[in-house]
Amino acid sequence: MIDVQHWLSALPPGVVYLIVAGVIGVESMGVPLPGEIVLVSSALLAATGVVEPEWVASAAAFGAIVGDSVGYAVGRRGGRPLLARLGRRFPKHLGPAQLARAEQSFARHGVWAVFFGRFVALLRILAGPLAGALHVPYRRFLVANAAGGLVWAFGTTYLLYSVGRAAEHWLKDISWAGLVLAVLAGLGSTWWLRRRAHRVASADGAADMEAAEIPSDAVDGQSSASVPPAVDPVRAGNEH
Image (cartoon, rainbow, N blue to C red):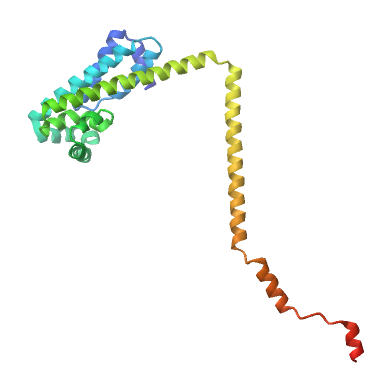
């Protein structure tokens, strides 16, 4: 992903937006491409100021919605034979096992599988073609598709953008001495917690061993019963 981000940083912003929309759009048509990696890399790139986050999110949402709609049309026209051909062409991503799991998700959740499928790698690829092949009504599909695409694109972009900005600000303002102290404090606390956990485990083990031993009063009673009473030597001499 770092290589993708470095490669994108050398391109003009307009080209980056087109790549985001194109890769995510083709992936949504049913072709396994790293759409999420491109989106994550572009969102982190936006945190550095190279591209604008709103344009990255808009491009991703556009590609997702249009790509899913094209995939729906292709799936509706080609039907299950098309899915079978895709499975033979991409057995690792769209094989019979993956297709069966996607169909189970559609059978269980209905059109909501399109919405939540945007957040799952397998359903993100198969949602459009599979919905078309299963003859899901297009209006219901379009609503779930648009909602899922917008939430996924803008949510992912701005979440990673905010995290990247916060990390950059923190690393810029903190001093090296503070960073060293923070690392040492983390190592020290980890060592103390492990040592305390070891002590607790040792104490629990000792308590278990004591509970498994025979009670002391039973041992004392057995000992006193087996030892004969002491004989007074003076009294014994007088008897003789």
